[in-house]
Image 1 (tube, rainbow, N blue to C red):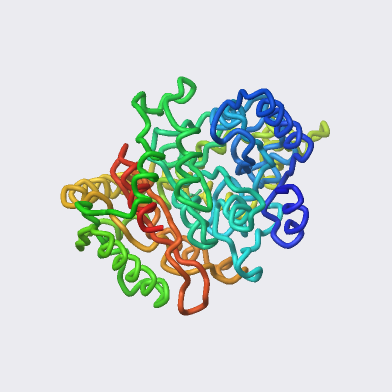
Image 2 (image 1 turned 120 degrees about the horizontal axis):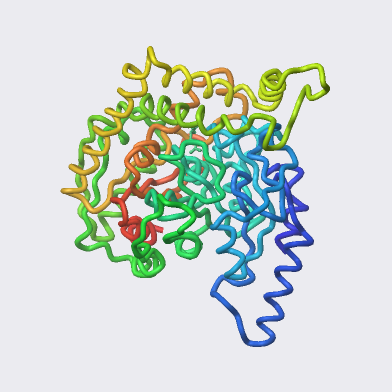
Length: 454
Ligand code: GLN
C-alpha cells in the first residue's frame, strides 16, 4: 500500500531520492513468514520506514543530495539502520534533503526541491523536507531524520508531523554523514507522538561504534508517551521562553502557540514565563560553529576516496583533480559554508569568530540550566513562520537562517527538543508546530507533555 501511495504522489512531491520496492517487498515477506510461524520479533516488525539520505545504507545509495556522492553505495549500514532491520522494519527508500543537510527549505538539494503536501507551491522545510513530506503524505508511517539546527523539528512544524531531536549522545551517529559533529543528532519523524516514541526507543541507546553515545539507559519515551496520553499534566511546570515567543513570530503562529499554552494549563500544567537572554546569540553562534565543523568534515570529499572524480585524464595534478571535483560536486550553499567555516577557523579570525561563538554557546547552556531550575520543560513555537513559498528566500541566506531561531538553542546545548503540531495558522491555514524542550536525558518529559497535548 505504501509503495502504491509513493507511486501516486511522488511525481508531485519529490520526497524520495531512491525507492527500493524490491527490497521492501522482500523484507515485508520475511516478516509475513514470521507472523505465520508465530515468531514476530518486535512490535514494529513489518512497519515501513523511510531513511534520510545522509544515513548510510548498504543496499541503497547514500547521496546526501549532493552531486559529489551521486550513486555512492556505502559498504555498511548505519547503526540506526541496522537496528531497524534487526527489529523487522521495512526500509522503503531514501529521502530528499538539503545538500549535506545544510538548509531550511530543501531547496539546496542537487536533485530538486521537495514540495509541501499541504500546498505544493510551498517548501516542506529542511533539511529533512523529504522525511517530513513523506510522513505527512502517508508515503511512509515513520521516517528517520537528522537534526543539527532544527532539520527534524522545523520540517515537522511545516508539514504538521511530529519530529524529535533526541538528547545529544543518545542515538548513535555511526553511519550518519557528518555535517557538524558536536550538533548532529539522528531522530524520528512520525504522525503521532507515540509513533515517534516507538521509533526513538528502537534506534536509541549506547553504541560502541559511536564514542559520543552515552552508556546509560535511554529515557523511557514510549512509557512517557503512553502516560501523557491520559491527558493529566498536574504538577508539570512549563516555561514559555520569552525570547522565542514574542512578536517576532507571524500573527497566526503566535495565536496558535498561545492557544497551545492555554491547553497545557487546562491539562493541569503550571505555565510560567522564563527568560533566556543569551538565546539572541544562538543563530550567529550556530552559523559559525556549524560551518567550522562542516569545513573540516567535508574535507574528506577529495575525489580520491568517495564518489565523483573530475579531471582525472592525465593532464591534471592531484590538487587540480581535487579542486575541479569540489567545484562541480558541491552546490553553492555547501561552498558558502566551507568558506565561512574555513575563515572562522583561520589563525587571524579564530578568537574573534569561532572562539567567541563557543563562549556564546556556553552562555546558552547556562540559560537552559537556569531555566530548568524553575521548569520541567520549556516551550516555544517551533518556527516563527509557517511554510514559505518556494523561491522566497533563496537569494537571502540570512532570512533562511532565521527560520532556525527557535530550534538551534537545543542543539547548541545538546538537550532534547520535540515538535508537535498545534493547529493551523489563521493567516494562511498552514500547520504550526509547538516545540517542547527538555533537559539532557529527560526526553521522556517532552514526550509526556506532547502526548497529553496531542
Ligand atoms: N537549517 C539549519 C542549517 O541550515 C539546520 C540544518 C540541520 O539541522 N541539518 O544549518
